[in-house]
Amino acid sequence: MNLLDKQQRYLQLGLGPLPASALADGLRLSGQVAGLSSELGRRVHPDYAHRHLYRQFVIEPGLQAAIRDIREMDKLDQRVKKIHSRTARSIVKGGLRLVTSSDNKRIIRAWKRFEKRLNLNRSDKLQSDARGLMMEGNLPMQWVLGPDRRVVAGVRMPTETIIPQVGPSGRFDNPAHAYDQVDLTEGRTVARFALWQLSMARVDPDNYDDHGCFGRPYLDASRTVWKKLTMTEEDLVIRRRMRAPFRLGHSLDGATKEELDQYRHHVETSQANGATTDFFSNKKLAITAIQGDANLDQIADVVHLLDTFYAGSPAPKGLFGYAGQLSRDILEDLKKDYFEEIDTLQDTLSLTYQQGFTLDLLLAGINPDAYEFSIQFAERRTETANQRADLALKQQALGIPREMVWAAAGHDPAAVKEQLEAEAKENDPYPEPDGGHNPPAGTVRPTVNVTPSNARKGESATTISTRNNGS
Image (cartoon, rainbow, N blue to C red; front, side, top):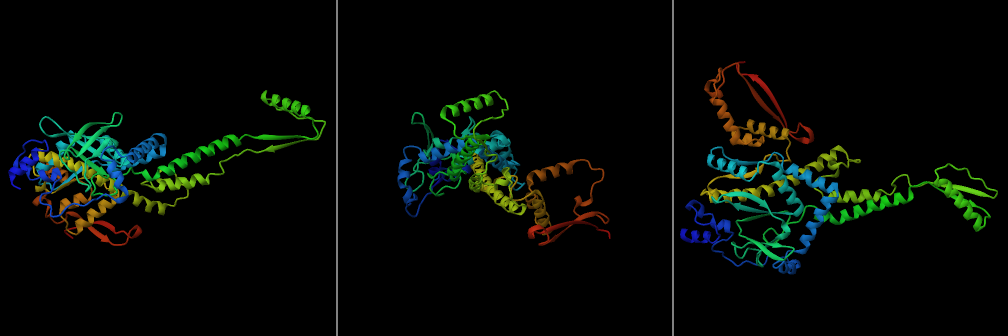
């Protein structure tokens, strides 16, 4: 396909003419591949064939029901809200960063402008997207273009209103018409999106290669357990309310019905007046105290359902306030699983922002394939700050380049290099000879020693000591 054909194909997407450097990526954005060597088969599972046919016309009812239930759970239960809120905060902690060489000044400047225009430097924006990704299982992000043909906003759309226009092979039939947005109240199409206009991030889709297959809300499989849990808790409260009061059983031996009614009326009247009454009888009278339920002694059912519910959450219940008899060692192992879940969600979310940034570069006439870069969250939860510093020191001891060491320590190499250059330009009354690369005798420099399997749980231990070069 020559350059003219690529230009015409890109014009079909509605973007207008672009510089030649961006035309090479037109086909990649449109989702089409030229010169397919074989036909595309059906990617839809046989069990979902009818559902796939149904969702070509209306939104899948099962997905709507799941999203509705998750939103209701988040609204009514503080435990579900805590899971979503805490996980979202863990995902976005530290914000986004551009991972690239410090020499790519053009890409770095473009990212800073893109991040500021789309409010990606605000934690509330990132946390809102992360919560939506967990609660809906999908993140439909619409890229809005301004008058200057630049991406000016990334708007999160409601998943239950989006219908992907794919064929039986799971691919988009027309990249210029990839998604429809439907008004659920009127049943009409309110907007149509080209493939470049809407990026869809999905959590655990049944088939990743089927672009019409949606993801699942994170707590989708816990909906049934949550309903049983809340029902059991309510039943226990009702049971205690009915059985908790202290009661007395009065047995008046040989009394007639009139005598029994008169005695009952006298006792109830005395108790209603709040008086402590002594009981007198000329017949055989026995008063037995009936103790009410002082505690919720049937709590084992709730504990079982609670454990089952949190088994489907990203973190152990100990991190959400239910410590119980959970030991510290087991909690540490469960926290590692939690951090792995966080990293997976971070990669899914950051890839969406990277797609928007790639589109912005194309619109600016920059070929993104000519540069090596990626968008990541600054803090990977699988590694603590000490572990990152430990890894960076080990890489330094191995002679790894400085920028890779800075990245391993969790810092932006471009920002670090810029700050070092700024400090070097300042007037230093005591400048180091040779730029600090060959310090004279008597200068103290750190020495890094790595001792394998000498730390907790078999991890490496790093020792930093100092030595005198003149000694």
